[in-house]
Figure 1 (tube, helix red, strand yellow):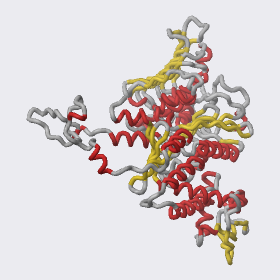
Figure 2: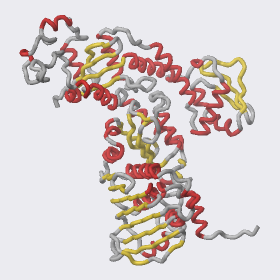
Figure 3: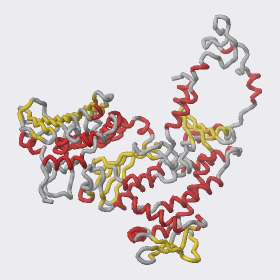
Figure 4: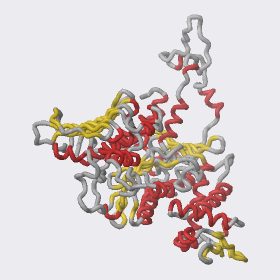
Length: 600
């Protein structure tokens, strides 16, 4: 066969297969161009899930006719020159516009601030028209219609309009979070309008716009630096979690990424605080010298490669754990909201009185009227004789001491124990209900972990070392982590080119399948560059021991024991949730209680 060059249009369509996967990819590329052009206002309009129309309008710097003519040609860009190791912009490949034009009907209008007129170019299935004068405001308008009409096979693989609309919305939200100083609007016939006004440098205000008040109410601020790498953002309390990872947002130098290392570190930071199958919620932004991160990994630019991945992972895990420790006794606001909702009166019983008086024929209840004083009503449980039958309620501590505890301690002073499992404490501005078993389980667990990791974990020597055959590359990766595994009680050493010898295993795990454990760790290191599975297994055993060694449900506690438990919770990291990720307490503010009774 004769070797020959491919036509330019076919080259662009092949490139489009990597760069433009779906309409959401078009939106991402065009938004990046608008941000790189210095826009402070960006408007996106779609129709048919982006298949029929994607239009992006911005007030950026705009392009001259000469710029516009080159912009629709491959590998033409204004963002980099000859240094691919120092990329400070979102885009840099010069492939997006020609790739989009090769598979759709593309129209670009642009005008610079110092020009009297705009210019326009059209591309249809790779055929480029000449640049012509046009009428437009300063900035750029990019209109994409009938995506993949030139490659019908690709069109068949797109999902429903609703699914494509959702994907566009997700891309839009990620860019909006990354750039709070840009006003962003998303509208169209296939969606309700999203309008995010600029919040300047207030990142939390933009996050509140995009993710709602619940995220902001449960967020803990993150700001940490390690060797010129800075991590900022917000991580939510462990009890505020989700069934999927869609509310995990990561940015590297302002670029939205879907990086496995970052999300693995996030998972490790919340280890033993979130139930299995649940995911933490966080918005993390990493800033570092562009020369220390490679963004030219994939045409979609969603993956990055750090020069020192261990440094970045350690920074994320350490910063989040420090933040959780700093506010370790904080519980999710969602639990209080759900509890408040459960207390609200039901419509089906609204017409009945809790005082038990029968209605008259007219339906009017004179004795039960809310406008009649209580002394006019029939004898009820409010009388002194009725109250005396209830008996005196003993307070756990003297009133004056309780008031001091309410004012000084976040979890207040214990007032009662309900059903031998729930401690009710009064705080300065509300009340707290504590699950005594879950709370004490967490305290015992943290104490066990502290005693375990203050020194090397005790190990048991195998009478006959177990030889585990592995691929040579897995052995190489495992030996990098051999020292860290040794501190956890697992002693391994190289045994030829394709095997490792296990000489010691953690004593706390008892009799285990050493070969299975090593293979699992090898898979983890290959996937995540981390051998955290062993620590997770040790923590699981410690959690089980804590569960069986903690205060059981059904045990009556004295006032001193209840207050002692509250004080320990206030000083123990992660005490807002038990070892299984469930909340250990729920807090109700006085304002919420007053709303239940219509006092506000």
